[in-house]
Amino acid sequence: MTRLPSRPNLDWKDDGTPVATAFDDVYFSRSDGLEETRAVFFRACGLPERWRDHKSFTIAELGFGTGLNFLALVDLWLGSERCSDGWLDFLTVEKHPMAAEDARRSLARWPELKTYVDQLLASWPEQTMGLQRIVFPQWRISLSIFIGDAADWFSTVNFKADAWFLDGFAPAKNEAMWSEDILKGLGDHAKPGCLVGTYTVAGHVRRGLAAAGFEVSKQPGFGRKRERLEAIYPDNAPRDPQPDIFLRDAPRREFERVIVVGAGIGGASVARQFAEAGLPVSVIDKAEGPASGASGNPYGLVMPRLDAADTPQARFLIQSYLYALSFYARYAPDFAHEVSVTQAPQSDVEVKRFSKLAEDPPLNDGRLSFSDEERVSLIHHGAALVEPARLVAALLDHPGIDCRWYQSVETLEAISGKSDEKTLTVISTGHLISSLLPEMAEWIAGKAGQVELVQSVSEDNEVKAIASGSYALRKDGDLLFGATFEAFEGDAPAVTDGARAHNIEALGSLAPDWADNLVEAQLVSRASVRATTPDRFPIAGCWFDRSETLLNLAPLQHGAPVKGGAVSDGKVYVMAGLGARGFTFAPFLADLIVSQALGRPLPLARSEQEIVSPVRFLVRAIRKGQITD
Image (cartoon, rainbow, N blue to C red; front, side):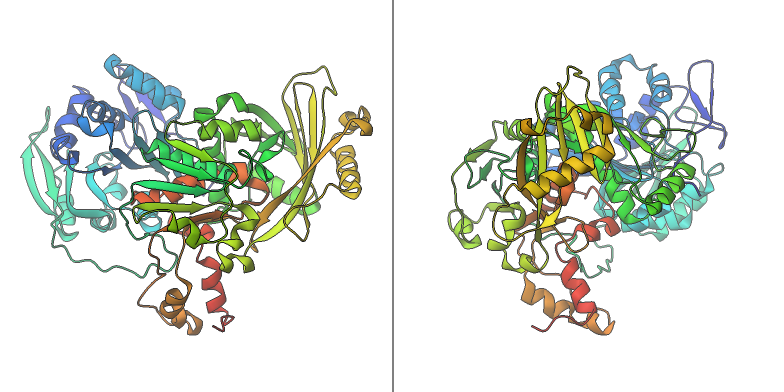
């Protein structure tokens, strides 16, 4: 199986209705697909009445297709009172994602939806496998689309829906979508009282829903269909919860405000997303302004790390990259500039990895191509050259965010002591996080990073980027290059001649023509600290109680099952260990934190959440028998 999901093969009816040739079925009713959506799904699921008493509401769907159901739901949501202070999460799955231009053609018959169509198409899902989170803050809606099999979606992603739209191709033509396992998965991903709507009354669908725990009834159909199905998941349905070892489902706490400690890219991303959710946020930092540390370099680069295999780590790296591009385009477009990055291999190992990527690319040619016929170097299209300090300031420029500078906080108790019980705290202070959370000292290490800037080195103002271990960036005639990545001791690194010499030598190998015009006397060096972890992946999520968690997870040392999971009071969240990819990781991790805190579906699958879980290093140490306390 290739990593690049295939597009559907389409035929078109005379009236513009798309037909999937693989299933010989239309994507929506030829009589009126929009009215079918309203009759079959909205009425069956009690919308909009059911979300009136919910601060957040989750709807899931089998079969995204053209996005018509989602767009009709946007229209319904924006016409309701709940959209002013609530949040709608829409989760869906699509094995063969349609190209944006085909979706536009399909949706052209409903001009009343054009405004919504344009905004959806501007953020249309990428052609890549796995879960993608697309946020529409102007609508107060999140769209989470899983590209792949519905069975994989159910087995890898945790969520519970308030309502289900079952809109796959007809059961007789797409048996896999309506299998017994898929219908059982609906029950596994349904909240008590969840309502289901679908156009089919096929006998095995009725029986499968009933076997999954739903109470099923027939209702009058739409158009030429005499009947359709509705179902409800009862409040008393049995549950068999599994221990939450990696603290995926954080304890729900009622909170009315958020304190964010740290005003780098991590803190700014969290603050902005909480503010967009309608919560007042206070950002505190010991510096005189934002982005004083590693987030304050003159220029930075957002580009992907692409692995040759389809692993949770590979998917996380792609998802965070795509999310960051969308996030900056939305909130700081003036300080995130589109650029194509040429990436040359650093070693024979990378040559082989790049070759495998060429044979089985995880992104389409709109995002990834190769420099020549030998396909030696990668070219990342649509990456971003960012202006870090200005970008961070733009993220913090929101009426719901209050920034307080010169605030030195020595202990976690000092933060919570200044706040009431209805305050949530998020800590994102880079390598200094262990001063507030001492347990972090064994998992977070600081690495010194020095970059070099020379201004007005060229009259060429084109945005350019080259990367291969180190990187070189050009914008408005300026050249920035580096960076070193070395251990250090103390709170802050110093600029060194040795680091400068290393960067100049790296530039000579990376971009000889750029290095030829370099005047060393004009260079301005800047050193900062990047916080790293032993596995080079960041830490993000709800913080945990170490002693209580150890008690619950102790059986893991002997390979035995556990009855309880990680323990937390849900008051503190962390983001740390962003390493050299802070501007790539931070927005996606911020969504994870906000979603956990507010009890919404997470933007990443279980195995991907485990990669960044704050509990993961403790779990590994227990399993290896390395815990003595």
